[in-house]
Structures are given as structure tokens and as C-alpha cells.
Length: 375
Image (cartoon, rainbow, N blue to C red):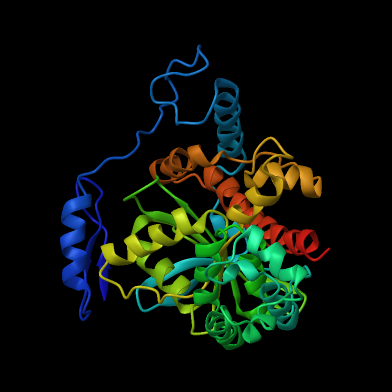
């Protein structure tokens, strides 16, 4: 596959040699390229009021002004410097070109349920059987039916209990989670417990930074995997937009038959976004694998305890961490566009750091949920 990046409008022209998905990608691009989702806020916009035309949604005046001040400071600090002088990384070559790759290894333990613990907790929930609600569950427990295994000898629920037990014994996480979501909810602790059916090394924690909420390029993909008690983080940063296919390929290369995705709002945003961008370039879609979205579980546990369940909020209240010089997610497009326009790497430094901190906090929340639900 060859990629060129030249056009009066700055669009990427992509030529594929062989791909069964190229026709789909070409059709998709013709539909979405004309769409413009956001506007860059210029430095001379009026910011006298709390909100003004062009301000990204979700920001107030102070947040915007502080971010603009941060951008100016960073541009002065890193003027005329290359990103490789500031962040230790290297160009990694792939079948879709090169991509700037950043690696970090951090000593950090992951706490999780064992396979036996997960099985025991799931089998204890009688409501996974058709026809059993709260009242019936209470009655059955009073008669000695405390697990789904016990129901195998029940005259009415035997067949359904055997089917459910077979499913749990199979460790088919995706279908077990589907059953839990159907009878309970997708945020139920039993859905989280299904993570116990997987080895620690199977988990792929990931987070993306984009130029908008839909149909815009991904500018940074961060992935993290465990090797015993070490968290290995890989970040794929686009020096220019033509490198997006290479970043997508690197992400896809992590996914295998045993892989399990872990994200924060990834079911609603990150995964659909990645699939869309793969389709845009006519690249092979990622396979269907189990996905644990920590946002769902975090809301279940902490929604009524903390102001909100944003990642940075939980980071503050659960781990006592407050970020300094962090770029608001809503301003990532503006910061990156400034980098593209000026060549000054200052505005992208906090984007890369923001992504790395998100990955680390994501793993900590995973472990914290284990602590909450293993009591």
C-alpha cells in the first residue's frame, strides 16, 4: 500500500495495492470527507464571556484561558525542537508506512479475579435463569437452592440451569457477558467478574485521541499490556495525518484470538471510532473479542459518591492524583492543529502525556473495582 499526502485542501490520497475492503473504504470516504465537525478557535476570538462562539463544548472561560496560556508557554519552551529531543521514541516501520512510537515500562500490579472466583460468583446468581426474579430467588434460597448448580435437580429450572452451567464452564466470556447484560445489566459486577476467565497478559488497555467526535482522524493511539507486574505502554503518535493507517495497523497487530479489550467509554466511542477509520482506509476490520468498559462499572460503584465519573475525577478522589498542565480533551483538536500549522511540538506534548496518564489510571480503576467487588 502506498500513501501520499498532498492536496490544496490537505486531504490524504490513499492508494491500496490489494485489499478486499478497498471498495468499501472508497465509498465511505466520499460520504464523510465533506463533513466538518468542529472549528478551530483562533487566538483572537472574544473570550470576555463565560462562553463564546467557537468555544468547544464542555469548557468554560477559565478552562479555555488556562489552556491557551499553557499552549503559549509550551510553544515558547519547545520552540525549534524536534519531538524526539523531548520524548524518547522512534520511527517504527509497518506495511502502511512509518509511525512515531513511544514506549514506557512501569512497575504496576494488576488485581483481578481468578477463574475459579469468577465462576463461583456467577453461579451464585440465580436470576441468570429464565423465570427467576427477586422474590423467586429468595424463595429458592430458603429451600436450599443457593447456586445455579443446585438448580440442576429442580423440577422446573433443571434444563435452563444445565444450559447456563455449560455456558459458564465454557468460559465463553462474550456470551456469558451477553447473558448477564440481558438478565441483569451491562454494568453488573458479574460482567466485570468475567475478566477472571482471562490471563493478565490477555488484557489490552487502550485509549485514543482524535480530531473530533466522528469522521475525523485519530492522532494518537495508546495501548498497554501487562508482563507480570510490569505495565508496558506503547503510544503511536501521528507526526502528520498521513501516518494514521500505520497507527491503525500497529493497534490491530496487538489483537489476537485471546485478546480482551479494556477501555473507558470505549464501547461507545473508541472501538466504533477505530472501526470507522479502518473502514475509511479499506483496511481489515478488527475481530470481535470481549470488551470490558470500565466506565459502566465505575458508574455502578461511584456515581453517587463523587461529583462525576470522568477519568480525571476518579483519579483525584480514588488515588489522590491531580494533573498539572493537562490539555482538556475538547481542545486536543486545536492543540494538534496548531502543531501541524506551525511545526512547534509544544502543543502535542500534553496530549501525549494525557493519553499515557489515562492508560495508567485505567489499569488502576480495573484493580480498584476488584477491591470493591472482592470484599
